[in-house]
Image (cartoon, rainbow, N blue to C red; front, side, top):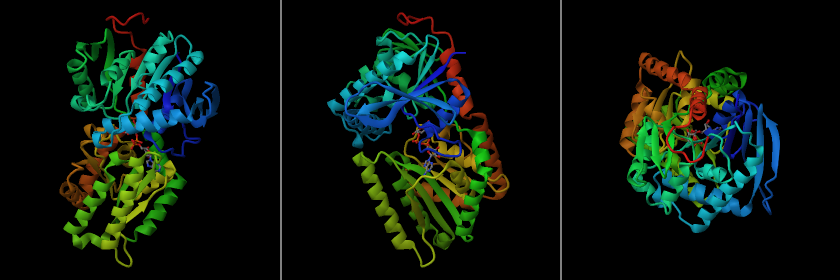
Amino acid sequence: MSRLIVVSNRVNPPADPGLGSTGGLAMALAAALREYSGVWFGWSGETTEHFTGQIRMQRVGGVTIALVDLEEQDRLEYYNGYANKTLWPLFHYRTDLTSYERSFDEGYARVNRRFAETLVPLLEPDDLIWVHDYHLIPMARELRKLGVKNRIGFFLHIPWPARRLLTTLPKHRALVETLFDYDVIGFQTEDNREAFEDYVIHEAHGSVAGPGRLTAFDHTVQVDSFPIGIDAQGFIEAAKSDEATQQFDRMQTSLAGRRMVLGVDRLDYSKGLEERFLAYEQFLIDHPEQQEDVFLLQIATPSRDEVEAYQEIRHRLDGVAGRINGEFATVDWVPIRYVNRGYRRDQLAGIYRAADVALVTPLRDGMNLVAKEFVAAQDPEDPGVLILSRFAGAADQMTDAVLVNPFSREDMSDAIRRALAMPLTKRRMRWERLLEGVKRDDVNAWRDRFVAALRGPPPEAANGDKP
Ligand code: ADQ
């Protein structure tokens, strides 16, 4: 059987499956690599004075990893720069936060080249190469330049933006052209796939070459949507573990009969946290009789804190949470418990289980795994209600959630009221259907579908000199 070579910016499998590392990608890839023999290659997160291309091979949590150090300039221009100041905000529809700097372009190209040069000596002829996410869009082009003929696939974990938005990116066409050196391109949702097709047809003068196939720049690629899932069975078990039970009991005690509305996110402006706080405030205003019976627990783990936009959103959230608490709190009730730390996966499962309602309300999100984890962790006898943004990729599959527009405070306030009042039979019915989907479309199904596509026969249409 072919080996699977996974390539992503960071390589951070959890050391034991109970431990969560922040970021859905890490959890998903570790679960995928435990099944296939192969290697997970990427940046160690460390910097060195001069790039050497030396690889450190390690075995972590049942997964073989290959790490390479980058230079400080790479971190600034490629990671903090093009990836997190250009592509991330743009692909999440935040042109107001998007920076375009030539040095970022150069850093991005350089690191993709360095990654390719470092990876090539590790490759065997029938390895399947699976590249992940916006940090590494041009990776296949760099590998092809070095003569790599293996099948290479790309999966984008974040949204693909609408055409008119993408065209604000300088050199957008050159970036998209590099995608045509892959054999398979995967998106989270049909909507993203359609946005890509729309760009290819209207900006790149491409065409549809058959079901799921697009031709442009003299190459044909297979393009499809592959909605990512969670390790559902693992999460259901984590929710029953001693650690989860202890955390659940601790939460129950601290609830003191109150109802808990829960948010769990990376601290990121795309997650709609400020809008969520304000919508919850609206709910407190709309329903004064419920004020002391409910609280919002928001767990937001800081991330990318070298990027100014992340420092700013953190500062703003401190301010908004502080103001709401100052305005509404009583001597024995605080409306928002705001926590800036990460939790182990099993502890998180216990917290999800203790919640009456989850607020998963990103302004844009590729998928959102918290929504799926929340469902997997619920008590079948008394499940909580999921409130989910229409703009999360997960909303396409999770239609039994209470779907909301995260830009409307009134809409969200109503949704919180409805969710808290939902009778048990209705909660159970909706939750059972949601759980069925979470179990069926889990991370294994996602991986197997992608790998099958990657393994599949290459399109007959002209694909240069690839096998
Ligand atoms: P993220 O933007 O990181 O992922 P998400 O899908 O919600 O978003 O995954 C977050 C993960 O981190 C979850 O597994 C969650 O449990 C964990 N996490 C968050 N806060 C935590 C905390 N305080 N403590 C411990 N764990 C925490 C990107 C895309 C998403 C896409 C995933 C996977 O932005 O849209 O769903 O990749 O493709």
